[in-house]
Image 1 (cartoon, rainbow, N blue to C red):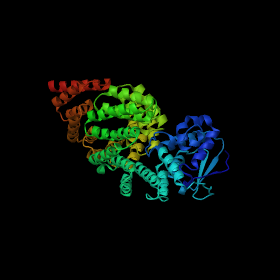
Image 2: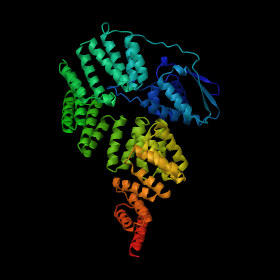
Image 3: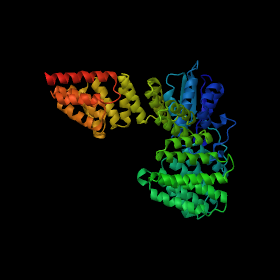
Image 4: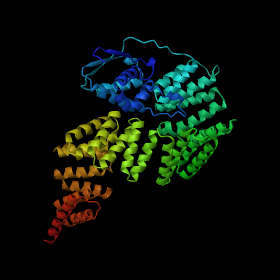
Length: 567
């Protein structure tokens, strides 16, 4: 590439990632080794780069991705571009045309790229105008349906919704029921993924009013059940309605003439019942449904056929075993699941959680790493790996992972809180305060961030501001032990020892940790209540796992109390 601007047409008529996919392809051709390290996200964004891959819609069965996956893809693609741009020897300007009319995937990636490239030689020229390429689109229902299926399978739901609406405009249920239903259910699937499940529910009601075709009404019944079980806003979810519609779907599945399809549909729908049973506190009943389903699937499937379906049931069973307090059996199921479907990041995240619970941190870190590669760049895997790295005494690795989480999802409050606390632990108060204030800009009443910012301001001598921040934290979470402890320290330093003791009374009531006892003992000594202070120091000394410095200080203060009471 040279400093002569290169133009890419980003108009949504060319589909998801229009313009940017071609730009990434050009870089990949220039830097194949770098592209190989970003193969997963590049294939997802620009599948033409992988000539051996099948279209996403041809993969059986289709795995529906969460809508937020596009942010994960964008992060990986931008890291790819940034690594390339960092090696440029001269400025390069890249022009992206029709950005205002681009698909949401394109705009999202360009927004992240503009924030990331910083002072590199790469310059972006983003325009709403520019030359248009001709779109040779096939307007037939069959072609629209293929495009819809591919967009759904790749998780590009805004484009899928537009495609489904255009398809619905070309057919009617009376004239072409098959395609009308495909466009209707495709639109409903896209809307549910985009947190617009109420609109999806209306579409299934419309389908039932338009036809009594048993296969369509069966599919609509199951989809309606899942909206009530999972996708509607929490206040509108209704397990009873979900169960009602699942029973309708099962009744219609029982009437299917093809015995194999009857088994497949029945088993699939029964997994919805198993979900409801598990949520209702009936894991044993859920387990029976899953075991029976696995037996029936195995009986009708050929060896090696539909491995992802079998993996999905075993994954469900692993979750039920975990709910029943049997992590060993859950682990055995997850090992089998991963052997059958090794490219699903969700399974590695679940297995990593089991490894972590069993103190197998190295195995957990390996599984989180695999999930990050396959996801790709799964924020929760980065976050959980950061927590493990911190526990293992590797703060720099933890900080790197937390930075990645926030680069992918700036609104990830848990990561923001963890990163701020990590900065505090290592005395980086400027970074900690900046992070806390950034988090509070997104969630002004977040108790943990208010508490940490209060601690930082107290360390910097702004005691009145610190007390106000800690009081706000306690208003949001009256059981936040750290806020009671920190406000007590501020009040003690401001000379209100009685108020400090009152705060520490609350902290001690909430936690058996030694620090609140130690602090309360110190405050009680200031009030001359030596025997009460001695009891706190003695109690704290009895706690297991005390670090050496705290144990020494407790013994010193206890000795002072004893001298005061005997002198």
